[in-house]
Amino acid sequence: MIELWNLKNTRGARKAKKKIGRGPGSGHGKTSTRGHKGQKSRSGASSRPGFEGGQMPLHRRLPKRGFRNPFKKYYTIINVADLNSFSDGDTVSVEVLKEKKMIKNVKHGVKVLGNGDVKKKVTVIADCFSAVAKKKIEECGGKCVDVHSKTEKASA
Image (cartoon, rainbow, N blue to C red; front, side, top):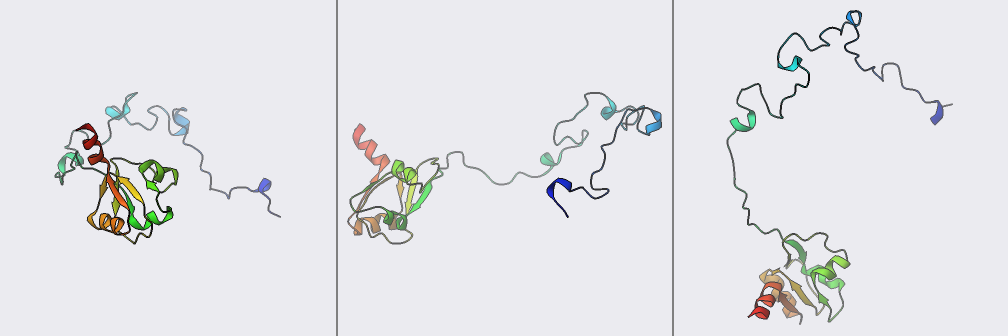
């Protein structure tokens, strides 16, 4: 009967590690499988990733493509349909959405998109709104508060 304590590997399943530098009788003595002379035969020899022995490396031979805009904003998205989980008169902000675990990490802010229908009258505080989302929230009697316009008015 097979039990966990008497399980064994099949023959040849576990291959022994090659022992090098153990004398001429082993077949891996003297130069220890490194060959004679050359860069890789020396102790401590290693080359950086992508090094091709002086030949122009692949990452430099290939043409450059595209452009990554360093100023692009990556918004965390929430849809209008997700606002139905709140009750009437609630204020929905980034902190509240994090508490309810509707969003995880926010890089540059939260954007509300107009996917679905909203049936609750809520005040939404976010960084950005799509035109459709703003229309749907306000039709239902809710309010859209843009974080940036709010701070600008306070400082002015």
